[in-house]
Length: 504
Ligand code: DC
Image (cartoon, rainbow, N blue to C red):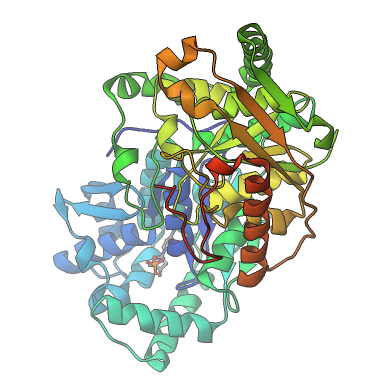
């Protein structure tokens, strides 16, 4: 087993997913585990492992006493991250658990009460150790009846048979849809009519019929049921806890395919030493005071240094959702932009690499939340959209990274997508002069720094934005930012799909 992860106070743990064979439990379980850094236990594999052991020992499912005795002495261990591996007597048997023999016999063995009680005990022990997603037939009803988030997936027998036939090819046991349907029907019958903990939805489970849904739709729908974190006083506090929740997903970040990216893997020694403490910390109570302390402190410093100006503040709406976008020249841009905005608290979406400790503590205290760039980071998008739906202010640097040349680069489409989903207006901003802060000697020369705020871009909410709509709004954002910048920050731009050479 790997190092246990403490349950987050803002993300529910454990998560229970139940449903019949091929209803999508494993896919959803892995998606939760991958996105939120949980571990995933497919409990069906434990029943399969028992079946393998019983078949090896020649014990029949009708010999309940022998099955119970075997379950009591079985050396069955679970190794899990986003996926589950099962060790029997210390040997990894995962690849043998989908064999036709096991497939055919698993339902009768898993109906034996003595087998169930032994495996349920083991599953509870496993789930007590860190945040987990457990998938099976009785997780929400028997194994973890107190789980704060439960799903029950269902789908028509035809849809499940088709999926199972596809999977069986991947598992090297090619079956037709008709053969799969026969298997599924008999498994359904045994699983839902057995006496000991039959397959049924927990009364408090969220039921999702996956028959007509794509994989992405199931995942998006399920993620949308993650309860909003407790709300604090004002609009800004709500955003903070929301983003803190996102930040808490960071300890074990992965990209869409589940691998940790190079930048993400490289957490420093101090970060690793601090991790057991920082993972347990709730940053929320400190975010608001820290944010305003930084904003006002920086305003004083900038004022003393002179040569600092914020223009166009009359364009900032006093309330309601708002997306603040700007060009990006220096790491100091978020606090400088925030000091320019001043009257509203901005929650910045920041690249996940910045959340490594110890610097990550400042970012978290500032109320920022992580995003995996160049990846459809669904969790970050959802957090951003929820913040806006509650009237918060989202800060984004749509180029995705600092410009190394000082010239503004083409925005990524994420900003436009969030704006179109939520209908939040966009405040285009331009930061001028912070590129000089990279050199300490320049700081002594008191560089002229300016935050310029342009006219609001009003956006109408669209449920499913088309590529053209996203591209058109991205162009408008880019045009609005460049219109605020002095000419030498802007390079000839080659069109919607073109890339500007200023971005790296
Ligand atoms: O999810 P699966 O097809 O791998 O499950 C294999 C068998 O195990 C299935 O017949 C039902 C049973 N099972 C169960 O009874 N309880 C669980 N929590 C998980 C699986």
